Length: 238
Image: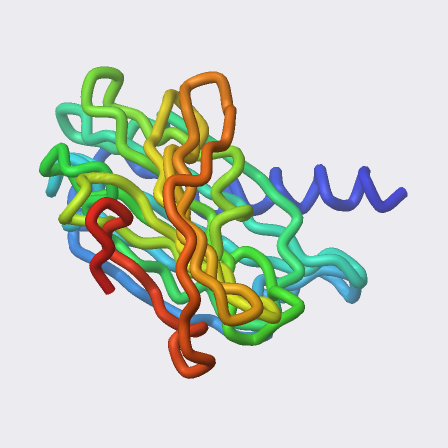
């Protein structure tokens, strides 16, 4: 029954956001938060909507719409990506995920792979430790004019683009901290180095193409250096 309601609700969402081919006025950025509105029935409601058509991908020719909604006691996110046709928006990708994050979407549009085209992240999960912000990353594919979901991006809290190494980095906070350096390979992130601060020691690792981990240095550090994020591992830059 629940799966049927989810299916019907997604169909209603698709219909309610269907693009009119004669309407070209939807090219402006329209960032809206709609909390507890558009109730389809007692078991479903739209929580939040985000739309952008000026910044994502090929600017002015790409559009993204993210809809966060509730079905009974579960929350989901629907991601729809469009490219501009002659006089209409043509859908290229549709993704749907379960999303139990307590926070709002808080989308961030920026270039995460240094190809001059903007990508996007949004909060998709609430981490056990509040210092870890977990986001799902979508990267614009300029060749196919589509949006690629990075499958393991939720494993990289506090994700960001690292200019110094031209890569993705992440910052994991637990009893200690680890800065992870990774590169985008197709639809996944793959680590190549990391710096861990644990038990008053800082350990620098390199990871080869087959996933073999090598310790390249280990230093004793003061306790107040444990929560340090790095921008490089060789040489070390904070």
